[in-house]
Figure 1 (cartoon, one colour):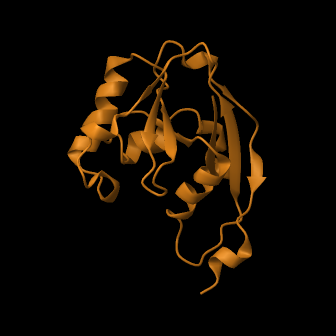
Figure 2 (figure 1 turned 90 degrees about the horizontal axis):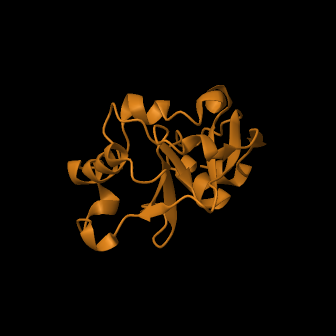
Length: 153
C-alpha cells in the first residue's frame, strides 16, 4: 500500500521516526507514544497538512514523501462502529486509547484510521517500533507547494 506524508523540509530526515507525534501527541496517540501519521493519497496528505497551517501564510519549505508498505504485511483498520459519534470533532482520550493500544499490542505495522478532514477517506498510522517496520520504504522528499489561491484572504 502506498502512502504520503507532507512535512517541513527540516523534518524530512526524521519523517519515518514519529518524533512529532511522540513529542506532542495527535488525534490517535498520546504524548510519549511514537506513531507516524500518513495518508492514503497525496491529496489527503495535502488537506491534512493544510488544516494545520497558520491561516494565510503560505509555507515555502514543504516536502512530500511517498512510501510503500509491502503487500505481504497485514494492515489493521479502525472500526467506525467502535468510535464515539463525535470522534471527528475531538481528540479525546478514547481516540488516544485506540492508537496507543494498537502501538503497544504490536500486531501490525500499519493501521488505517478514518480521516476527520474528509469523510470517507483514510489516513494510515505506522508503528516505527514494529518488528517489520524496516520493510516499509520511504522515498526521497520532493518539493511540495500549495496553489497560491489557497492563501487568499
